Amino acid sequence: MVTVLDTTKKPLRHPEKAHRPENPIKKKPDWIRVKAGGSPVYEETAKIIKDNNLVTVCGEAGCPNIGECWSKKHATMMIMGDTCTRACAFCNVKTGIPNPLDVKEPENVAKAVAKLGLNHVVITSVDRDDLDDGGAQHFVDTIQAIREMSPGTTIEILTPDFLRKEGAIEKVALAKPDVFNHNLETVSSKYLTVRPGARYFHSIRLLQMVKEVDQTIFTKSGIMVGFGEHRNEVLQLMDDLRSADVDFITIGQYLQPTSHHHELVEFVTPEQFKSYETSAYSKGFLMVSSTPLTRSSHHAGEDFAKLKAAREAANSNA
Image (cartoon, rainbow, N blue to C red; front, side, top):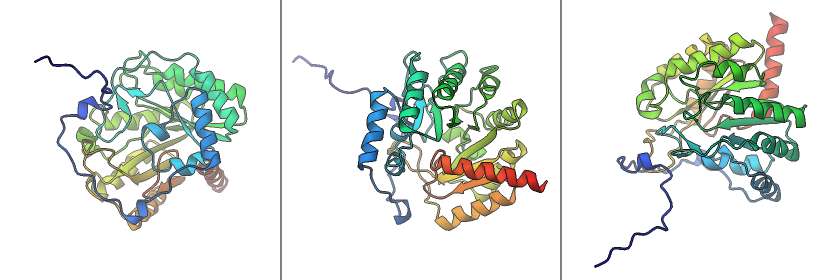
């Protein structure tokens, strides 16, 4: 008997997770439900993204807010391809060996920002441990391209950790994004299982270094809850961020992408999220977004305006 290999199968999106034990996906409570996209504006946004050969974290990470955001012409651009060199246990972005950088990407991102007429744009990326600078220069080129085509647009970046990439953090900070975001993702005790390729205190130090380069840049970080962390650990994380002078924290519910991803231990209630918000403001954050559907770039433009107003108010009262 001749065995014929099936060459039509697509490569696994997460090959490193294929042999992990399965974690059943829990049914979402009512407060997690969202409406799907499909409006004419949503379709127009999708076309602009496609025509400019761009990748968005909205689609790649399976964001639950994509319907709302794209219907408002809001999209978070994900640069440096769709394939990540890390293998975080929570993330739905494809993992593997990425393609070389697209030198036209910064210009294409800037064109899409102009076509969408964005007042505020969020630029994120996959981790690119294969690059000497982790992709820092590509961030700089993208910021500069947007500024040339849309000088009135404020720019928020959500970067990887640039672990072991000397000078990369400073290089990006010197490009003066309006907001420099780097997510801790979870409390320190969960890093080994949730974010094994990263280091908790390196990420804290990254955010601190941004302020050392330019005190006027707003800094921001976000976490997910529902991994089984304890409340006191979340409060300690807030203190660690404030010790690095971080301005803005986002807290949202972890949603398990597949049965091979990290287990969703619990759905945190809206009341618990509200309690986290109260605690964060009491610790001195200028802006806090803490709801089950909060994501790093959800309502980013509106939040930036509030963040700016909060700093102005704080300075006037000083």
